[in-house]
Length: 472
Image 1 (cartoon, rainbow, N blue to C red):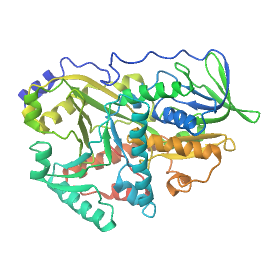
Image 2: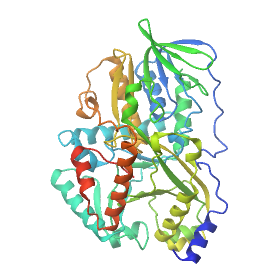
Image 3: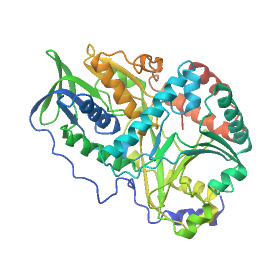
């Protein structure tokens, strides 16, 4: 790395604030008071991220007379739901490739359900007047190496043979650079309908408002400390009160599950992002991007990037940090060495934006499971349901997961609960030091594959055969 380039990248970070751009908003709603009494309800929802919020909202839509309480340990949307890139994908399987590999017999049904789910999110945003900058702009996966361009073309041909290419177009270098101009782009795969862009924190805040308007009782700064049977229902203890409920839905994702046996299925992986200052009209014109699609590159260690409503560029991904033992600490949310690396990558992708500065830099934990997509289950004789393991693609899929949890709690057989994806769980992660060693070796192997024409070594091939992996 040339010293002059390093200096330029460092200067771009000189004014950066270590906080999520999405959460640094003057319109952020005030927190609801903590629970300080003994509550009773039909359904208790634990967790105030997308998973819990959608569960509470859909529960009231299904049965307006149902008494629903939601408790959140901090504030609604403060964790992953307020720190992600704002890519709201139709895919329920962490992408079509992962779904086709794991559930080939169900993939058409999964794609149909995913499309309906994304339509349902768009309809809810309109129905409840949620101002979250929702744009059905699609996404382009871009190739930045020759082997990636060949792989994208081959993948598009496979999708056509399988009858799954509707709305997906292969773009050569000229075509992709007409959409967004980077000298690094060699090809692209454009999903025109399957992804929307949105402001993630505003979606969470809007869902909170909609829940309260439907009669959900929301308590913030109310961590759930203990879950136990209580007569015909369940009881949850909180610092200053308690909740007795007929049924409980756990939407805590990466935070320690109140059902202890579920904890082995997820590990926290820390992801990081930068946000630029707003681009000027000339700067925006220099890169095109007139259609405002989300973008992601095709490397194993990949970047994701998109425009905000005020024409900033969010640039995230690449580093994926697993702390030994799966520990979660506030200091892991801030990682300057990753910010410097991301800034360098940004200016390699968009050299025409030299001089642009970053205003926000942040990180957060992703609930990662070994199959990369959500898993589901029940406990305590069906009185408790959970969903977790979205692995970074939960902005859209959590609404589907909420429907699954409600189906399971109702004891209903539906097209969702009959899915193999819902009925079976991923492989759990091994205990330490094996988890850390395996993840570290997988990360090294993925980086090596990126620098060796995509060739996967024996370790990655073994992980593929076992259905295990680690997604950067």
